[in-house]
Amino acid sequence: MKVDLFFSRDIKEPYAEIHTNELSDNIQKAINLLEDESANSMIAVKKGKDITFLKFDEIYMFRVEDKQVKVYTENDNFQVKKALYQIEEMLDSSFIRISKSTIINLDKIDRVAPSLKGMMFIMLKNGLKDNISRKYLPEFKKSLDL
Image (cartoon, rainbow, N blue to C red; front, side, top):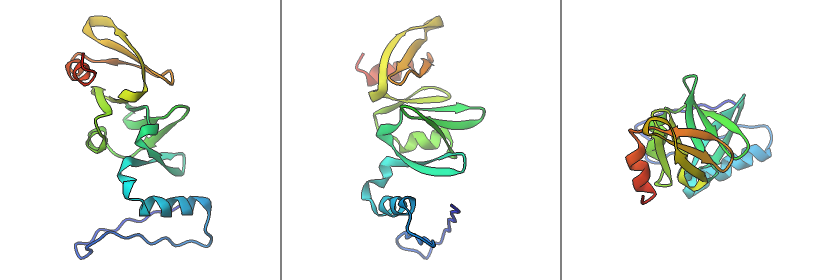
């Protein structure tokens, strides 16, 4: 699906036009999403040529890999065009940065354990693993009331 985005200072309220030859399930989902007031709790992600929308509570982790931001869910991963700091600004307090390249969903933590050189090791409920760097450890502990 081709997407065009236009900016104009003359527009008082954003609106969207969809041009299609049929009303498919994906088009209907896009319409519902655009009309949904709670849409700020979702993010557009890409897998191959497909674009889909994920609710933030479905997301386990955002991680920079090979200069691209990957989004991990329970059983899948996607890419997102935004930089990690832009994503971080969109998120609520259920997400926290644990390193320069990783943000995790606190609700998806399975366990946390000591690791090397003062860092902590984290495992998410879907099996993903990462280290909490020393720089981000105080804020992480504070978010868990430790």
